[in-house]
Image (cartoon, rainbow, N blue to C red; front, side, top):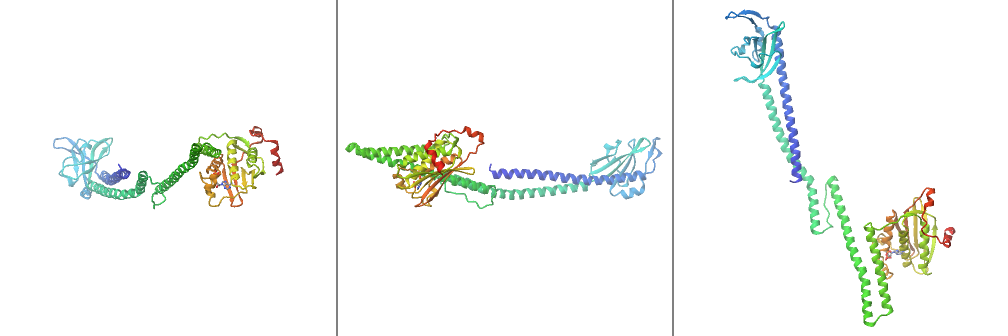
Length: 488
Ligand code: ADP
């Protein structure tokens, strides 16, 4: 059963029940109101008769028995004759007196109430007449009931009014139900239409593998509007992921194919002309490049899967930087000047090996893209709640249009050149991920022809003084390297 049909049926049933209860209540209220006004009129007639009735006197019956004689006051008989029927019954069950309009009717108006000892009101149906409301009132003399007065009025008007109202309610109910079914069904259909188009778009995407499709929605920003927006945003993300994944696979294949081609070519040469140093060196270089590439890819894959272990601990960032500074000096081989800039002690909670990896990636890029004679400056300092590390070079710089992409995987400004220098475009992606995994970020500032500065921002640890003792000094600081810190 469709949602539309289910919703329409449900609210129609609810509406139907409400209308039914309402109609029954209105009709019952009308019946009891009208009936109580009839009862009031009967009550007043009875009290009028009782107050005007002459005291009963004894009469001698033809059989020789003595009995009481009640007489209706003549004026009551005249005035009430048209609408009320009156009978006075003796306690022995014989009729004493009756109004003229039922003079010929010798039966009690309400036979069942003829022996009642309390006031009784009942609806009575006498064949050949309209339904009657009969009020029976015991007549008391001293402490004994001497007779009963029965007054009746037709309730045809009451029943007719009730019937009319019930009929009206049924007609109104049917009209209301029909209108609401028609209008409600239409409204539900309009409201559900976007869901239908979402389902259609989803199935087209599923069958056609077309993630570029979006669901058109021109309605108000209600629940369905939000659903459509979220669905479109999800599609956008999926599309981007899909494109990125496709590009990634293409990039990886390309990166692996080049060294494999070089190796294959050199192996062919060796087979044909025997081994020579150049071929062996080329094979060695390409193998190293591939090993590095596969290592980087593995690391990123583990990072994506959340499986890369992080051994975080309290550490002094300045000591990590000194370690990298030491290595950088060796790597520079005297062609580039490596120096320490601002050098303030800062403490962070981080994995020292990963931080070193991050810094070495930045430093090795600085070497690659800084011509001989250039300067690379490493610095570390606290800045409010943040610890900052920077690697600045006086190299060629990065064009502004490339800056937003340099942290993307496999992105290189000058592909051919970067590749010659051994880069696959993964170094910055890894550095970015490491900064991210520490709750920090990596930013870049560059001017073409002047140089580039990469800054790592990490959450700084400001521990209470007593915990300073527990700091892990896992990196020994060579005494000679402490000097630059003081020179600053
Ligand atoms: P690669 O391994 O190719 O160096 P990276 O992800 O480390 O890859 O860097 C991506 C690209 O960013 C590099 O190819 C280069 O074009 C640019 N780049 C990175 N660092 C620097 C820098 N210090 N100076 C100039 N360009 C840089």
